[in-house]
Image 1 (spheres, rainbow, N blue to C red):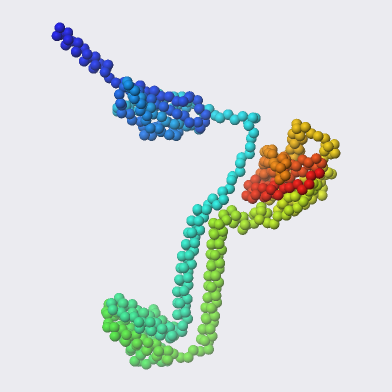
Image 2: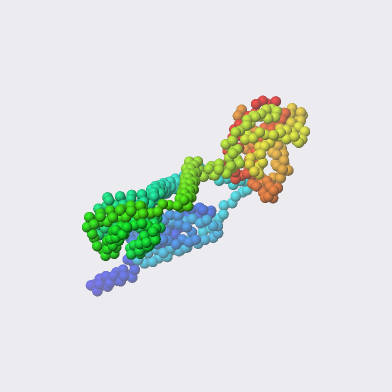
Length: 540
């Protein structure tokens, strides 16, 4: 009996090890349908059924090529009494027609990779019935007012700041240059004394300050001697300068005493020691050297001979040349200022009114001039038709009998307006029309207008019929669309917009026809303004 019980437990353990106690998983994939339209959303589901809570891992960047992933939804988990249900959803899309496979997806379940099946999807094109559905011309681009407002504001602010900095810099350098010119305009003697006077206020203490002090001191006397005594003093060493002064003294061109030359020699030696030997003399010595240089300048001025008449005339001619050069510089600065102001004004105008408006105003865009010009309100034909137009409508003298035409403008260049008055036969004007006959009559009128456009050379016409309500509340026929007109000069076609309003009265038929280039930026505004002004004063 005991052996039987032991054998039973062994069989149970062996049975459990053989797999009866193992968990299971079931992977299913599904889509809403196997056929979709181009651009339609495809919902792809992965469903995993297990008997315990598994650890699932999906790819962070799943590969659904050639489909695009619209959205990756989070994992949804449901629990029942006997199992767990995991649901993963993806939204896909495809914009090309054809047959495509949703590729296999890899899923890690408790670290073990599993592969799903693939699904064949059919993407169908969207069928358009052109016979039941009317065709319309491509809508024109809608201009956005001040579309570059932010960009223009940034550019304007940048240009303004740069212009302000440039102006301040020019003013600074101009003032500095004027001060320098005024200083240079002084006679060499007065300028030398003025610069020596400025050195009186300097109180050097360090060696570098003494070096700068003596450099300015010797530069004053050297420049003065070069300008007044015609000595190349600025490029000469101290010994060479003294030698040149002695030669001038010996030749009688500069009557300086020996004591003055010795004093100048002593100052130049002190300056060389400070500049090259890095010595630092006492402040009293530096002050004394400044007084010596001032005395040398004064005595040199007294020792110079009187200028000749030729030298005086040469000096006057040079002054005239300098004055002329200054006037030219002032004119150049004024011109640059005017140019800068004009550029700044244009930028501000673009910021305020927009680039297109400014450009069209500057370059005299034809329909822009029409729109902003003085319009003419007048009456035409019988019954009197009151209308406002940019120009007077001129009567055509070569019209057929019973037809009166008023027109102005050129559709290939700007804006064309035409009024056509056609007298109806008495029999036709007195007969009462049924509703069906009225529709046929309207279609007959429309066909007649299209034929007249074809005679005028119009091709590739796309025209629609729309109801239109007059100011008095009456409904009339309105044609609108586009067509091509041949330019006889360039032999090229221009795409034009057509607006035709037909007013069928009892004794007369009136047509208001407007044509203008389709790309014209102001044509629609002129069109709306003319239509708004249209009014029949009296009906026969």
